[in-house]
Each structure stands twice: as C-alpha cells, then as structure tokens.
Image (cartoon, rainbow, N blue to C red; front, side, top):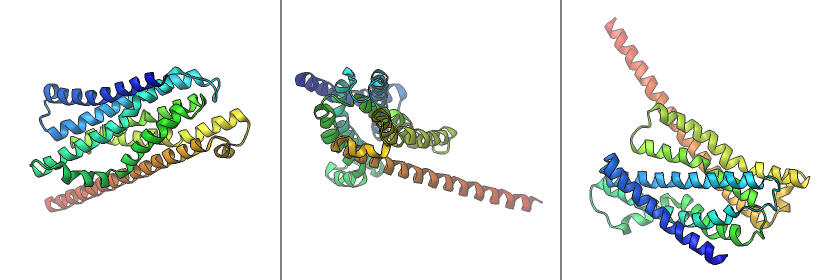
Length: 278
C-alpha cells in the first residue's frame, strides 16, 4: 500500500507544476498576456482552481459513499487523493513565491535577486505558508497513517471546504486585471463571504453535530470523545479559516467604504456643477 501512495505523491508532485507551466504557456500563446508577472499570478490561480475542483469532486464522492456509516465506512478515494494532493501544498508555496518575485521585478522594471524577495515573501505570506506546511507535514500523515481506517466521511467533508477556492481565486484574478469596480467583482465578493462561511467555517460544527447525532451525545461533548489529534487538527484548521474569513470581510468592507466615498464625492461634484449651471 505504501509504495502505491508514494507513486501517487510522485504523480501529484509532477502534475501540479506541469499544470502551472501549461497555464503559463496558454496565457502567453492563446490569451496574449505578455507580462511575466501576470502570467505567473494567473497561472498560479488557475492551478489552484483545478486543485479545488478535483478536491471538491473527491470530497462529494467520499461523503455520498460514506454517509450511511459516519465513522467506519471506507472509500478508496480518501487515501488516493490525499496522497496525490499532498504535493500541492508544497508546490503552492513555490508558485506563490514565483508570483511574488515576478511582481517585485515588474514593479521595479528590473531583474531582482531572489535573495532580496525571499524574506519579505515569508513575512507577507507567513499565515498561509504555516497553514500549508501544517497540512502537508501534520494533517496528511495523520489522515493517511493514524486513523486506523476511521473517519473517511469526515475527511470527505474536509475536502469539500475547497468549494470556496474558485471564488477566492477569481477575486484575485479580477484584481490582477484591475476589474475591482466591476459588478462581477462585487457579486463574487458576496459569494465568497457566503460560501467561505458555509464550506470552511460552518463545516466544523456540522461535522461535530453529525458525530454527536450518531453517538447520541451533545455536540459540545464531541471534542473530548474523538482522538486528541482530530480535535487539535480541527481547531488549527478551523482557526486558520476563521482568521481568513475575518481578513476577507475587513478587506471587502474597506472596499465598500472606499466605493461609497467615491460615490459621495461624485454626487457632491455633480451638485456643485448643477448649481453653477443654474
């Protein structure tokens, strides 16, 4: 079994970087984007959308095949996708750094040594880097080797959290193309707040409630009933999701306030012009 999982991990470590390179090529040749910084940023986001789509489909398949027995039902796709998807977390850190470095070069219109951008990148993205490393080196090993065949249903639920990722990445792509004033950007922001909350925050109390219903106990008893590493994992992952949600909400509120201020200034200016005309 372990050699198969290793081959799946190797396949994933090839698949995600190749997907990134293919997206970069297509953006340059087919879409006509010549900026290396834009190519890198958009290719990174498109690869993230691809991973999110695969994870969500796998999560849905696992949940629908294991809902009849929340704790002991098994699904072959759990270990398969966990092994295949593990390298994505490490790839994504590299892709984010490549995007950050290209952006820095584009802003200064010069070739910059990677030594000058690496530490600032770590400082700026320390939250998501920490998340990715914890998932790769703590979450995946626990999911693959320390569950004793239990909880496939709940891992399927965890994979379903990726349903919000396409909307988050679309927001970044629209921002990259200076479309923050478009209706699509505003609608997508509203969808992010809704879907992110449902898929990445509410999913944890829901899974606890499902477990409590199955065991006929109160839901707040669940964290003390399940293995400690499961409680710790849910706490850490849920904590990251909550922090990101607050960050999204603050950023969107600032954008709303800025837009409202611009509209007020336009109205005042139009009013002044009207008075002069009169």
